[in-house]
Image 1 (spheres, helix red, strand yellow):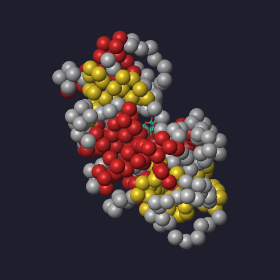
Image 2 (cartoon, protein in one colour):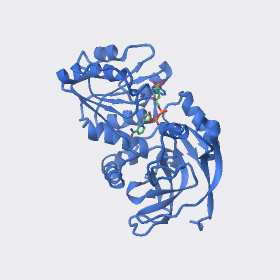
Image 3 (cartoon, protein in one colour):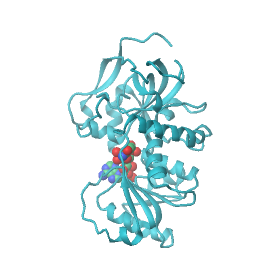
Image 4 (tube, helix red, strand yellow):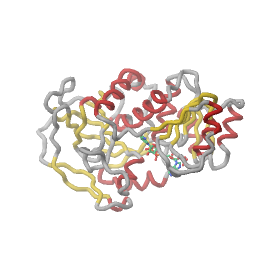
Length: 332
Ligand SMILES: NC(=O)c1ccc[n+]([C@@H]2O[C@H](COP(=O)([O-])OP(=O)(O)OC[C@H]3O[C@@H](n4cnc5c(N)ncnc54)[C@H](OP(=O)(O)O)[C@@H]3O)[C@@H](O)[C@H]2O)c1
């Protein structure tokens, strides 16, 4: 590993607004504190939350860099005091609370995963945020069991495609909704049991038909709005519904009777703002339970397209156009 340069290319946002506010700047290379590693970033995953941050509505949690970017892959470039288990040059990927859109990025050592042979840096950068989000919501909070059914809204999203792979790998049939016949076909190719074009069909009626009137055990929702009521209709007895975003709105009028009659559980979570120790615990579980399946190729991030770091504005515009299937990744 060559000596560290004093500064690096990074992406900044001139002022809150559209992708045109994105600019390439030079920033000092950050220095790792105790418990942190510095990663020479080769690839950084885009996430929908980055769009919201760019618009000024999703500020980084206290202590996190202003630079966007929640997941990276690259090589360990420096170790902070007290870090064990990692060596300079190790190929790694990591969940970070910010700073990914840059040539160098800090990560807590406990949030780092070794990149297995056969997983390229682009795919590795697309893994941490999606895998940890799906794990903590679908498998931890909602306790999806092998043989139980999962419904994923936004099935063609980065999160959705990963949820399909993880649920299938762990033994659950996965139903998805997506916004076009092309996206539905892509979800089936990724491994969905059935895909419902929500613009053409009522997903509740279609799911009831597909499940013989039983409904689904777990629902991963990023839509909100009137889906909150409709999810309760689509859930099976003792179903669990987890909200990870509200793309169609946080407010709606809800009849809660189905929750009581079906003994449903409604929950939700965010990942970014959680305590370091909590994210370390999630990383440890993912390392033990999911990472062997990633190494075996059973679970793989689906990558739609890559852009050079300098073209981050184009990458944001592409994500906002909403035609992608899987992840969009920046390369440095
Ligand atoms: N809570 C957490 O911890 C957490 C962590 C990671 C991600 N998330 C959230 O999970 C969601 C997926 O993230 P991602 O990075 O995978 O995003 P993405 O690839 O951009 O996918 C967003 C998906 O949402 C669907 N969608 C439905 N209504 C929409 C609307 N009004 N505007 C835009 N898209 C809409 C789109 O599917 P169709 O057009 O096919 O319906 C699209 O596939 C995001 O909302 C993100 O903020 C939450």
